[in-house]
Amino acid sequence: MPQVQATPFFAPTVLDVEASGFGRNSYPIEVGFVLPNGHSYCSLIKPEDHWTHWDEQAAGMHHIRRELLFERGLPVATVAQKLNTDLRGQTVYSDGWANDYSWLGALFDAADLNPSFRLENLRKLLTESEADRWHMVKAEISNERGAQRHRASSDARLLQLTLMRLRNPD
Image 1 (tube, helix red, strand yellow):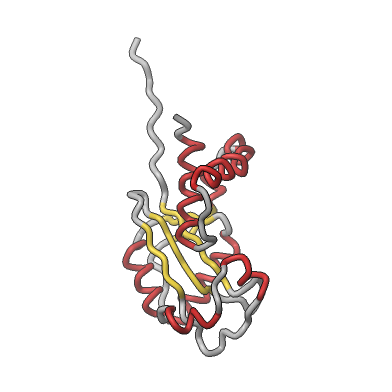
Image 2 (cartoon, helix red, strand yellow):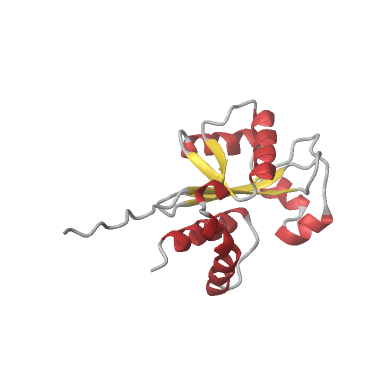
């Protein structure tokens, strides 16, 4: 009798957004993603004139100074167009779906564009057993990778690697 082999699980596209803080007036300051082939993209976002909220606790986590956004951030339209070009037609996953969804909404509203991709909660990809092991596996991978900056693309890669290890443990 032939053996049935499990179909390998391929990496999904994972996206992460860093923001000025949490709550109503927060806005995206950096977006990053990792594609299934491992290619990553990350960009700081230059704040719009009416984006003034700044939470020092959030800044302490991501180590991005507001001044840096004005020095090196790209305009919202440039970032939104890049996301649309690279992610067109895909379902993209985020572990902070509710926050990332609203921050991407602010980005695309400011750029006067609609996203060409769909954002979904990464949790939808997990079985109950995988969800139970998520934090442990994520911590293992984080320790193996060593010190990483808390930034959008490196966070997206950590999420993608965690999901891949849960699905393909060998």
